[in-house]
Image (cartoon, rainbow, N blue to C red; front, side):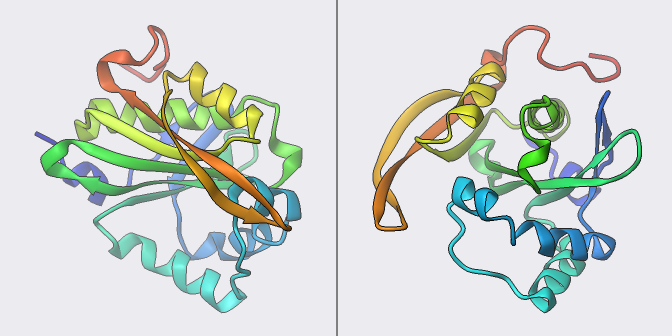
Length: 193
């Protein structure tokens, strides 16, 4: 049985290098700016540009949406905004949810920040929310992300052929999932685990 209040209570999750905090109005400017990074847009397959007003509205509405969990990834050292992540499409009856993460700039990749954020949210999803399965989509060309997801216990479950049309080329998306009991030993480093 999942604990839906663990989604409503919008936790703060703290790791060695990242701190996951509820996505809120104070993140709107950075959230908007992250949508302007061309490489981040390619890696996430984001075609449309959101306006600043849309970014403000989205960040302001997160605390009221109890069907999903939206967190800002911030630096544990100085509080700098590093990106955002979500547990969404939560299916309580199946103990399942989707996952997405986007660092806000290429400068933050390759430092283990995405992996640490993913480990923190998986710990929360499995240990606090009570999910059994977490799944995601990743474009097949995003080898760095695929390697990170694999290191966190995700396995490829399927392929969505030609799922993305980007600058005249079609790209496959991989469906990856991780089960609670299949997460690698030592993946979760939170207090009491």
